[in-house]
Image 1 (tube, rainbow, N blue to C red):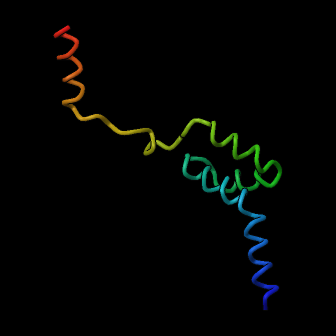
Image 2 (image 1 turned 60 degrees about the horizontal axis):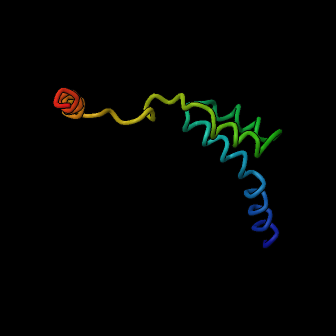
Image 3 (image 1 turned 90 degrees about the horizontal axis):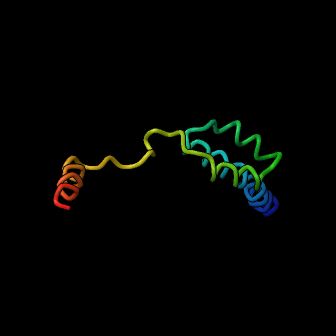
Length: 80
C-alpha cells in the first residue's frame, strides 16, 4: 500500500513541468496538449518560452479605463 502512495507522489512530481506548461499555455490562449507534449521534450525551456510569448487571450489583455479617466487626461493637457 505505501508503494502506491509513493508512486503517485513520484509520478506527480515527474509530470509537474508538463502540467504547469499546459495550464500556462491554456491561460495565455494556446493549445494545452501541444505545450504539454512539447514540455516532455524540453521541459524547462518550454516554460521559459511560454513566459515570454505574447498573451493571445483577449480577456487578459488588461483593464479598460473608465471614460472619465480619458477625459481628465484631455483636461490636464489643455490646462498646461
